[in-house]
Image 1 (cartoon, helix red, strand yellow):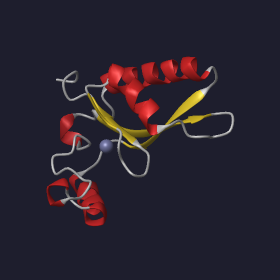
Image 2 (cartoon, helix red, strand yellow):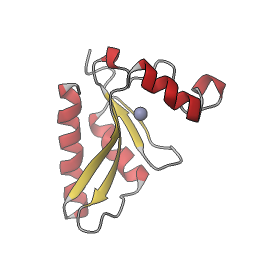
Image 3 (cartoon, rainbow, N blue to C red):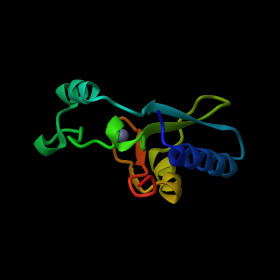
Amino acid sequence: MVHSTVLGALERVRRDLCAMAGEEVWLIITDAVRTQQDLERLAARLGWTDEGGAVARHSKHLAQYGGIAVDLVAILSRNRQRLPQKTLGRVCRRYFDWVKDDYGDGHVHADNRDRAR
Ligand SMILES: [Zn+2]
């Protein structure tokens, strides 16, 4: 379950990255919709943000928000090389309402918290 505005935004991000790179770019979705149980498992590992961790208690990944959030990385299809996190973040900001691109593992979080209302 992913909100239609997210699918449209992902397609535009991929189109722009392909144009910038001059070759085929793939977006790899590493996380999308989570259940409350998923969230609690994740928080057990990474901690809650209000306790200095990485997992928000009211995460936009929760199904109740309508499938509006994705975590992703971008790679060149030719050699599977990752595009820089900040490059992906910059392009995501064109089409998503809210983007976070400073995670230590290099992924970018993007969600359509306003557009999907
Ligand atoms: Zn996320």
